[in-house]
Length: 371
Image 1 (cartoon, rainbow, N blue to C red):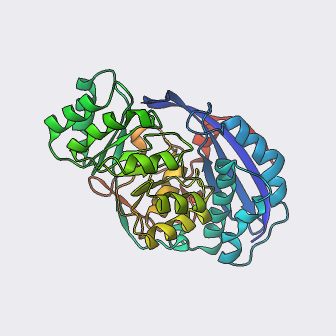
Image 2: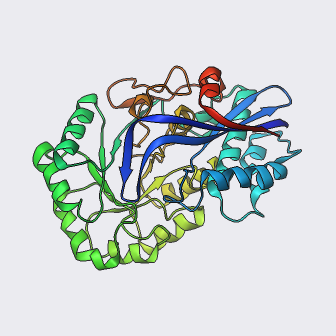
């Protein structure tokens, strides 16, 4: 397979409802889609999971566009792969560039997607997936009040979601979790702090032990491992690391230090499919459960998350909800929907090109550049 053309699309669309975390509120979906075309005419797509503002990570849509255009795409010029091993090594082209994992992932994943399309082998099988369906949980943002939150959760449980994750922050935590337990009993429940706390909050966070949570996600600094190890030694609730894990080395160090008992895999955050597979193998070796987190993706990113979650090491329900969770109209057709309540099918898709709706892409597009 030889790359012939790379196109960057910037899309913008209103989300179905705002999504609020401890670090911000998102109402519009502003996203970069990378499209690659091969000499044989195959097409691959991938989604860059950066945001407009550097809140979840230091990357933004502007930095990603710049790094893709001025560094990563030039490095990929002339690349040719003759085997899956070559595709798996594509990410090494980017080793001179430090950081910018999300930008790197977008181009790398588009190449995997194109290889799947050109070879006519379903992407999840190329990755090593073994499942035909996956369980799904849902992430619930911070609400105006507890009553509104309980109403949201009630609706999601009735839809069949198999795990509830709620965003927490100081002032919106212990009482909120207690109210959920009082209302819904021992449902599978986790809390996501998005780095809203410090070690000084250890005694406060220890109060969560009384509520039998599946995990508390990223309670401390977004770039920390050491303090999380100290916190984990002082609380019973399992810590799940998210923002701290950017590379396989990060995962290895976090596990060795005892900083977490669970890892949230976001393929964009770790630099693409090849790096995600390396982390998957580390976690399986160390018996660390994995689950696939969400970044409010369009259907392109959702289909890729589903393919990845088909791997055997993903043992906990992920955040890849159906398209209708965030969008009245997705850029893929048909959209991602439940196979049965709380369950998504792992489809035999040889890349996602057959599902991308060109008219909707065009309608959402606000910027486009071809190389």
